[in-house]
Image 1 (cartoon, one colour):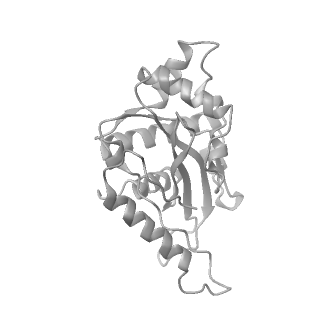
Image 2 (cartoon, helix red, strand yellow; image 1 turned 135 degrees about the horizontal axis):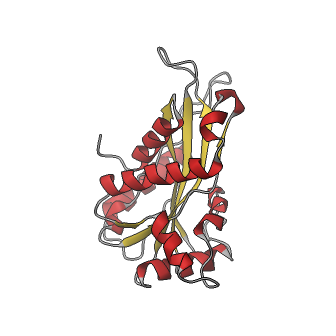
Length: 230
């Protein structure tokens, strides 16, 4: 479920109003789905970049990737460390290119910050950020909440408050479109924006991207929550 929210300091009222209208429209329901039709994905909510402009935002590393067996992508995804590292690299590069108004603190910088404070900061790769994929979670539970606050303070000098977390990346077989290759998957990338001071989940969406390769599908998923560019 995509959350409607307002930052207390948000000056972009039009964005918040538009999101509220979208959520209300979803609540009212649309045309009923036929029993034999595949479930339709929920609309992807755009990252509220206007509210984050000029701020440092930590981008947490991905810790959960899974794919349906029917895709046959075991060879591409069997090395968990390499898979997570490549997913982090793709997302970090795209965010820097597509959302340059935000100062992104990428996963490698977070790892360095954690290593400089042993016994104080938890390794970001070991954080339970996958819990943020839970649809109705509105407040981050401890100890993750305190871990995020500590890591953000170390990485930004204590001046910033937001963390963007990829909670899960799931590949599911897509229903083939005319002309599509035999193996065509949809990447579902669960993203959550957290206020590390209060622990509130301020924004959440399931980004969508289709492709015949896991990295093409992931790239399209990231682009879906950072729209407005090719």
